Image (cartoon, rainbow, N blue to C red; front, side, top):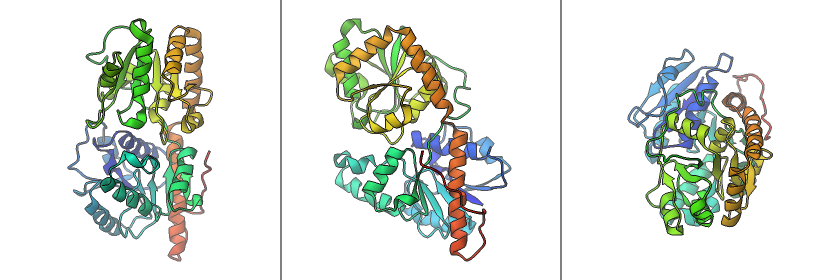
Length: 384
C-alpha cells in the first residue's frame, strides 16, 4: 500500500495543489495492483478540484484526520498516522517529512528559491524553512521537477545526488475540458497573458517597463491571471508606476483560464527563477506562442518551443512583443512547436516516473527490514 498525502491539494496552494491532485489522478490510471491510502484534512478549503472521483476509486482507501498540512505539529501527527496505516511507502507532493513514519518516504522538493535568494524570507521564516528542507534530505528519495532544480537541491542541501531524481510535471489529459468562459472585466482586443502570482522572482516589473516603452500604440493589452500577494505590488500597480496600463484578473477558475489560453496572442513568462514552470507547459499544450526569460530551467523545458529574451531587458521584451504581435507565421511556428513539446510532458508520464520511484523506495525499505521486495526489483528513473 502507498500512502499518498493529498492534504496539499487544498486552496492554500496553487501549483503544488495542481501537482498533488493531478499526480494522484494519473497514478490511479496506471495499470497495476498498487493500492493508495489517501491522507486528507477535511477542514481545509478545497474548491478547485473534483475529489469525489478519487474518494470513490476502487484503488483508494480514503482516510481523514484534522491535521493541517503546514502545521509544525502535523509532522508528528502524520508520523503517528503513518505508523497506524503501515504503508510500504509514503509519498508527499511537498517537502515536509513526517517524524518517525516507520516506512520509506519519497518527498517532493519543487525548488529551493528561498535558499538561493536569502532576502526573500525574513530571518524568522528562513530558519525553519531551511530546517524543513534539511529534514527532507532524510527521505529515502527526493523528487524534483527539473534537472536545473535537481542541481540546485544538491548544491544547496546536504544530500547525495543519487537520491535526488527528476520527474517532470505534466499537463493533465483533462486540461481544457471545462467549457471556456470569458473572464469578467477583460477589455476587448488582443492581449498578452501572464499567468502566475506577483512575487518578486516573477519579474513583472520588466513587463511594466516594456509596455511603457511600447507606449499608447502598444499592439497588445497586458493581462495577468493569478493570485496576488498583498506584500508585493501587482502588475497593474507596477504598470501605473512605469506610466503604462495592465489588467489584473486575480485568480481565475479553470474555465476562464482555458479561455485566456485559447484567446491570448502571446503568453509571457519573465521570471528570473523557477523550479519548473507548469503554466508554460499549459501554454504549449494550448498552442499559444510563449515569450520567456532566457534562464536555465526555461531552456531545459522549452528549447525550440519558445522565444527567449534576457530577463532584465525591458527594451528587448518590448521589441519581441511588437515583432511577434505582427508576425502571424512566427506565432504559428511557435505554437506548433509548443504543442509538440507539451505532448512529451503529460501527467501519465509523470505518474509512471513517480510510481517507479515509489516502488524503488518500497523495495529498499523491504530489504532494510530483511524482507523480500514488496514491489519487486528496483526501477531507476533517468534524470532527463
